[in-house]
Amino acid sequence: MVNLGAEMSPLSRGIFQRMTEVALEMWKATADAFGAQVPPVITLDEDDEEIDILHERLTGEVARRAMPTAVAAQVTLLARFYERLGDHAVNIASRIASLPPESHLLALIHRKIGLLGVRTGLASAKSAFL
Image 1 (cartoon, rainbow, N blue to C red):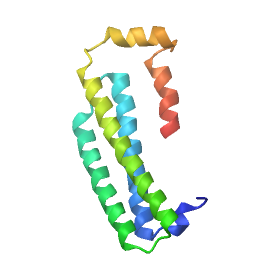
Image 2: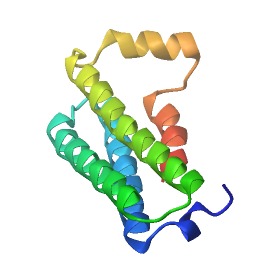
Image 3: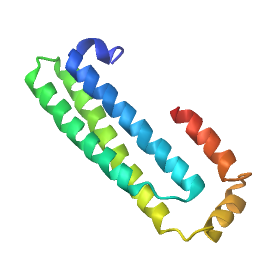
Image 4: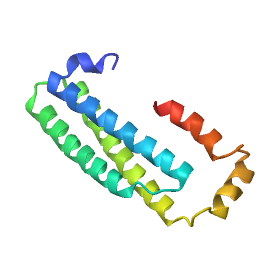
């Protein structure tokens, strides 16, 4: 599908745009939490709930509109992917929350994968989402 947005209704595009923004915010918060070892679980739960609601709204919008079948399938699949991305961000944040402060695990990870530090590794990860 070359230009999926052109085949979507304006409401569908708006919902999809908001899902993108929320997913990016969630992953940025998760990356920041890993760097600072401060769990963002409460905020992510609220964001995850928003993505779930947006997913339902987008699915309903696809069902109500006369989109071509291929477009409807792509939009529905992408909405599901965003919903799962939100779930994964919450799961990772929960695991970060269970890490002990100043975890020796982080030092071990850095030695094993050769990162110069958490900040260096996160800088490149964050740039992919910003």
